[in-house]
Image 1 (cartoon, one colour):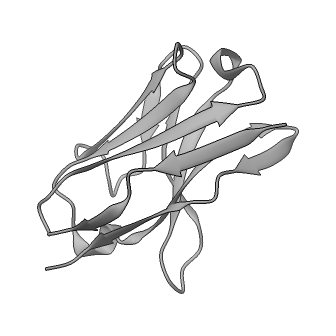
Image 2 (tube, helix red, strand yellow):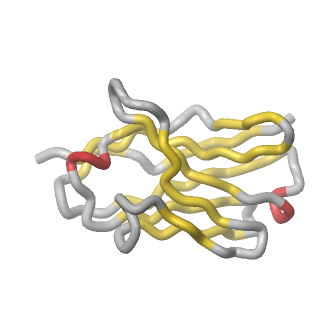
Length: 114
């Protein structure tokens, strides 16, 4: 059974940092690209960052230079390190991978506010 469990969200002031984690199970983690998406209230879910099975990362323009995606294959975990957070980064952040079907975690709330 595929499971993706996100953690690490919370309330942070503008300019602050957070690190999100996604613990994966139930599939061959090392063989798959993993992604982080986010969904702000009233907006569509959008891709934030992706990391290939080989560790190659890519980012949405809005977060490039501020966010870093990484993976620890020994721990079946993908991370999203977020720096210089802005109010517009406020959203529910989801871990995702695709294997025929779309698999999503339950999401973790990130709120950037003073």
